Length: 166
Length: 277
Image (cartoon, rainbow over all chains, first blue to last red; front, side, top):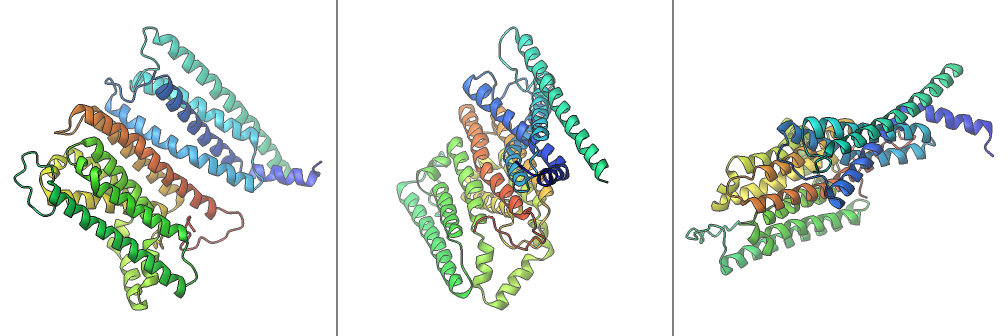
């Protein structure tokens, strides 16, 4: 069993690095879902295309920026996890909130702005793509909302603890 | 690439005859052997005069020279002349992988250790000068690197270079040098008097990766003049995914440096904190 003193020092480390927990989870989340998108939808299923002739110029730019950010985020998110662990400041609940925010936010941006408005590519090249769009975006919104709830809960806890201490 | 000037009569402007091709390869291989030899000798001498020289750096130098050699000699160099896919493979090796490995081998540190004190002072003074400061700034470095590629493919330079050996040499030299300045500016393995913060460099790194990826997709969609569509499509995908593979190493080393410098209890950032040691 851990003593109260250790527990309170872990909690205070978590609170000190609350935003790094959130960022680390967020980066790992968008990195992870981008990886799933590339492996499952592009390479295994071949539903998504490398380039779709209806892509606009702004679509190509957005796609390139998004891809580069995700590639960087995958690695940076993991290094930040190592950093939090060596400081005993890893806060799993807040980290998961960040991850779900990243996953949901990525899917929702990809599913609405990139697929529909910029027309980078569709989810799948079939007649009833509407069904795919609804499933994709509703699931993204649900994940996003759960992520925000976890972040708000842990944020409130951090605020309470900070106020109590001083 | 062919510097002997005998091939002006070739109709396609890209084929070496066996004799000049072999001579060209032999000269390059000699140059690469000299480069490996110089570094190894300097590293050994440095070990005696100073504390130690990490073996990993010597390995990086040798691999970096070999990556450049693979791009500039033999079958790859010959085919890169008239096949865009091989040209792109040469770009990945000469413009990305080789400069990254060379930057990791900390050549400036080794040079400073090998020179006499007065020459080393002169060199470090020159490295601190304003023009060098501008050139080695991450923004300038990544503009030279990725911007140079956009210019290469969409200004007619790419097709001109196939017919003019001097242009060919200059373009490839630029590819390597810009790649090196970019990797060195982002990673700062050597003493970097003007180093910028991690957040800023991370932003520039992401933007320059994006510039490379966007160019790959644009090449896929709008092949540059003189490149057949099938070659442009395969070459563009090789550039996109191959670029990601090399950039993954760059990102990993960059994050590792941040991880080391953000160590708890560490107060001061040292002037030189190599990730590879």
